[in-house]
Length: 154
Image 1 (tube, one colour):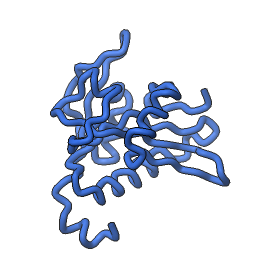
Image 2 (cartoon, one colour):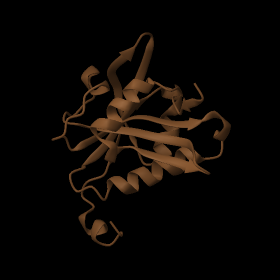
Image 3 (cartoon, one colour):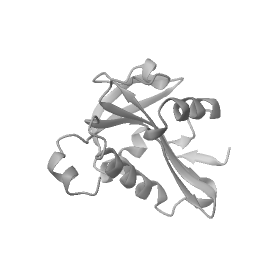
């Protein structure tokens, strides 16, 4: 697979990517250069404080939390800062969605500094494990930007 997520190998299989793209395309963002997809973010809505195993497959249309499932960059475009730039654009975009209050994700320990640079705060260990892998749950506040929204070109 040519796409490597910022958390190592892309954790979503293609059918899962398609699943979320069909359920909630407005919560995904792709970066194209010369017609090629070079990076993408897949998100869905969630309606609980913490992520659970259900969050890996479900989209909760009434939720106010965006669960970022994957941030992936094509391997030939790695180490160019594209992941950070796409994440910044995505978070700016989420501010334009009035129903979104926060974004959450889970990542391995070594990625915590990457997401902290983008404004995420570690919330502690995730209750989700995948085989031997454990994750830190991270959160980014999106809501409460009504004033900024009015003046941000949303």
